[in-house]
Amino acid sequence: MKMNFWDGYRGSADSPRHATGSLRWLTMAFGAAILLLPIVIAAATAKNPTSAQGGSADGGKQLFASVGCAGCHGNLAQGMNGLGPQITPPPFAIADFISFVRHPAGTMIAFSTDKVSDAQLGDIFAYLQSLSPNSTSAAANPTGNADNGKRLFMRDGCYECHGMLGQGGNGYGPRIAPDPISASSIMNYIRKPTGNMPPYTAKIVSDQDVADIYAYLKSMPRPTDIKNIPTFSK
Image (cartoon, rainbow, N blue to C red):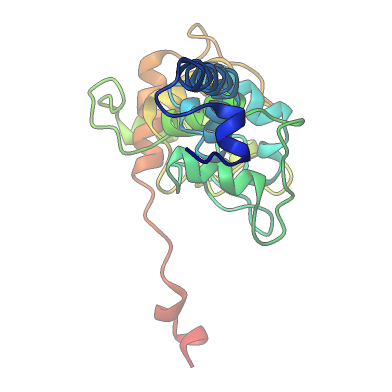
């Protein structure tokens, strides 16, 4: 039987030499696949960073301030005029949120993994979710007295930084009304604030006081749409 070069090197299909060579190649291929598996998994995670879900809201609160998010979006992610929009509740799913932080649009600077990791962004995302005003639980929406809340808002000096109507004070406190964040988030922030705001313990402002203040903030009407103001509609 006539044999070509490769037949001589590999042996015939029925020869022991061919079987041994095939087994050797299969073993090498399997070993290479095992070695490359961690690299493939890491690459897939980087492209679709959903593993950052289930972050720590408490850790995210600290990161939100230290990374610089609060400088443009406000300490409570309520947005700041001319700087950054409101980002609570989060406008994206977590994978899209991380992608936008890495490759933002507009004037926002990009944050690489050297500045903030995917896991840390997961914590920030959890913090933004915790600020959502859409919770329907009784703890998130306690019963309060808006009239007493207005009195407390003045008595405890909230208006000095946040304005008489919670509209925010230039260079002092962010806007906290209308449409405040959740009551539980307000409560947590009052007890353990970031930035320049001093903490208020339960001895100074009780939980019921906070509930009343929250009711006052919730009672604030939304401003009239500019389209409905005659001076600006001409």
